[in-house]
Image (cartoon, rainbow, N blue to C red; front, side, top):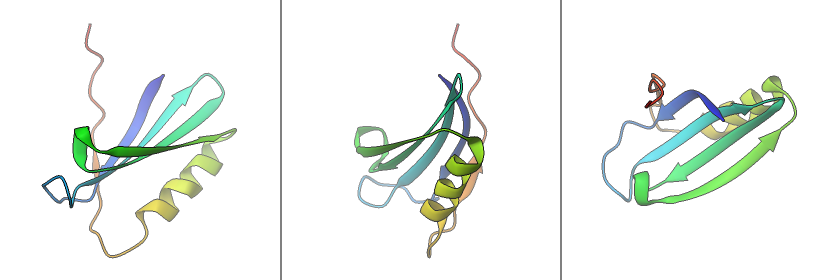
Length: 77
């Protein structure tokens, strides 16, 4: 699975931090919505097209937070 994009709401701390990830695996697209940082709780969504996955991302990013797109990490070999 390849991570394509990552958004962060710009807030630190377990209670405030939110992340959204867009990943691709063959012909399936995956969106992860995480609350609470690395140790937090995630919800996962699967889509058949990139457009549908991006629609879901846009809906998750809507609201009062100031979201930032972060660069994907290079693979760790």
